[in-house]
Length: 234
Image 1 (cartoon, rainbow, N blue to C red):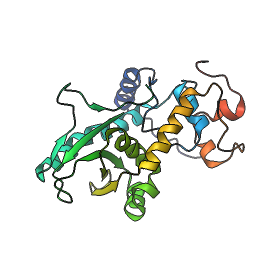
Image 2 (image 1 turned 120 degrees about the horizontal axis):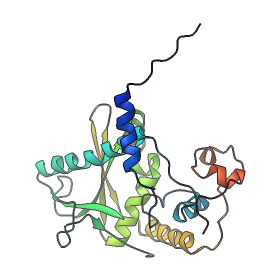
Image 3 (image 1 turned 30 degrees about the vertical axis):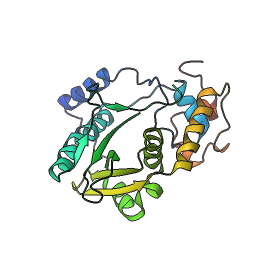
């Protein structure tokens, strides 16, 4: 007879439940730069129109928080190298924000690789496998959505360089990569955002095969392929 797995401690369950209670509805009032790198425009159309409620367990919400907390430490790390890092707009005291079609980032100067050039800075945390892929293939190939996010920021700010600062959650190893602005890609991504926002009907799927890997992993799968009702109908 197989042994039953041990029951989780009540304290653990209570901690996770508190994260879920504080999470809110998960809706965003804009199409964020962090999403625009998705290949499927229909998925983006659904994201923007709140048709599928985001649902994350307390453990995953805590994992998101870990990434947010790491940003502050990485800012301090950069400053200890002599770089100037502006993670908030000095005029507002709030995180920098760029807008188009009615995003967030930090800015830095004095990096050892290019002391006189302002950079858009993006901070990310990774699992060991994801971090290994990043080191092997670089940001654009291994993390195309992160690359697209930075290209949007560069396009909207007019800054010509970005720096991607990543940390491996398993080992605390840090990876830094400088990236040039790609004006053509920035223009393409902003045009893509405008299409998604202004489209009156869902764009075509990336695949009509519900088993296609991007469809299987999509939070909108039940709605898009199985005809499940939308959370909110727009």
